[in-house]
Length: 453
Image 1: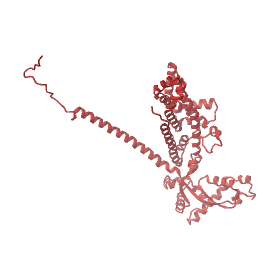
Image 2 (image 1 turned 45 degrees about the vertical axis):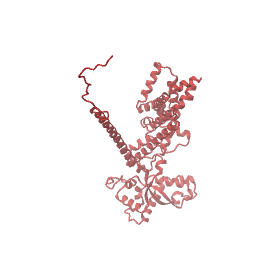
Image 3 (image 1 turned 90 degrees about the horizontal axis):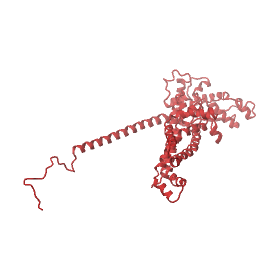
Image 4 (image 1 turned 90 degrees about the vertical axis):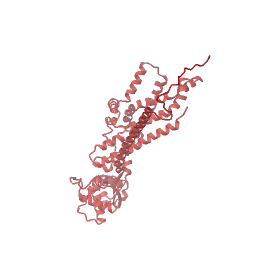
């Protein structure tokens, strides 16, 4: 057999030969499209970060002033003729003197403080200085005298709250133009404020009472604090955690590991997914009907709020727990069953520990979502209640009327005094700190208990 080649025949020539080292037009277009897509992504991320930075900056700028408050240092003479007319230091007689009996003593102390700095005041009567001080000052002095009756007859130095408008003037919230029609304070009072501030009698300092204190009436914005509402949120979260975690995890384990696949379980799964998308105010209406009107549980109590938020949080916990259980490889179940473990032993000794990080993360995220809810609490009365006192005990913390942080912020935001609007921003900062802390705990727990296979 011989090779035969046709005379004159030649190898075919490729007209558009290209090199692997050079990009053709199509490759260049694909690379350009990929580059544009990356740029679009970076722009989107930049826009998102910009809006987030603007939001956080606005919250901090408007809220940081809520943590500061203006205080006045006064030397109040506790006249025995006013506070203990019988001179017997009988605590029952001392308690009979109301705050109206202490007001003249405080007015005189304020007049003396202005005279002490050498300011030529236009006011002749001591009570004309009253707009400079908070309406809570007489109650503060009265509580001190009741706790220390031996100090009657002495001159005691008090650090008392300035009025809301005086505080707003030093923070720039109140101006001389804005008080032109204000019946509570005038330009002469602001002149005295400047003089006292220059002499150090009146100072703006950090206000721990805002963090630890209780809410106040609408006329005493300078005294309002969020501390009692924080306690209310704490007791509510205890109820939510104590109910939603065991119920949600147990339901997830049954649906994922033990329940047969039929129409009934399919219906349950669809309803759980639908409940996760139901507006929170619907759960508030359900809680109002079931827990208050039907079960007659105490209104505005953290117990009822926790029960309502438990209903709202359960779908989130069930969905996240089922996803964590499903993420465990089937080979682990097969291996446990292969060495003789029962179905329950397989789930609780092998599957559940491996799914624990995801379960904890989903639970904490659900709690964080519940912590920031306001609409359900509005329906059960926790928004309209003024939380003025700390609970007296553990049981009292669950069943006594109280408020919660988001409900308190909502209540402050709708009040007329601008000082409450300032406190609403400060309350948002505290609420965000709680949420960031809870999410950080979720990340730490996930990394701590995470196991790789």
